[in-house]
Image 1: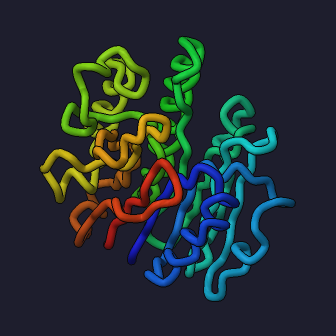
Image 2 (image 1 turned 45 degrees about the vertical axis):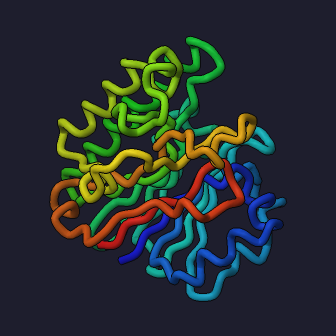
Length: 251
């Protein structure tokens, strides 16, 4: 299976730039996107009807904000949206799909950048997610993909010292990813690639992408049973259209 995940930072914008449909030329079995910023009535119609794919959308109650979507060749046995708690679900951040061998979590995790209360919300969301995933893990393997909004280790961002007190690299945020890994969830890219300079997000305002002054905050995590089956994992750094680039795995 070939899985791709991308924070598109606005599905209409990236589609209008002609950057989105080419992903289907790669024939992924599952394509997940985050931060669609489009409710159902304004989501590009042609993207809802890609031949050979089943389409799923989770939109925020607030227009032009957050949201996730998924295309899957195989129709899932079940699809749910969120964790069953309004404070975490009203932004359309989560699609959970049950396939034959695993549960897939497509998530746009909160950004803590608007103040301490947002960091608190982010940490509460993290814990609600992990609790939910651990319950499903008792039944099947787990695949987690999306914009986690935290760089885990110093190797995962270009300027770790300068950002030691910035949300997205705070000790409390990084400690959650330590906790995730301690429970056996495997960072698929880092399992296959130990080199620095590999990022998935760059700040638009400072033109950081041209200098590759970035952060790796988009991930695929899998449980150990699937980790043994990962053939390859990568970052599509040459794919433009968003301030993030896609990440992928092949199982």
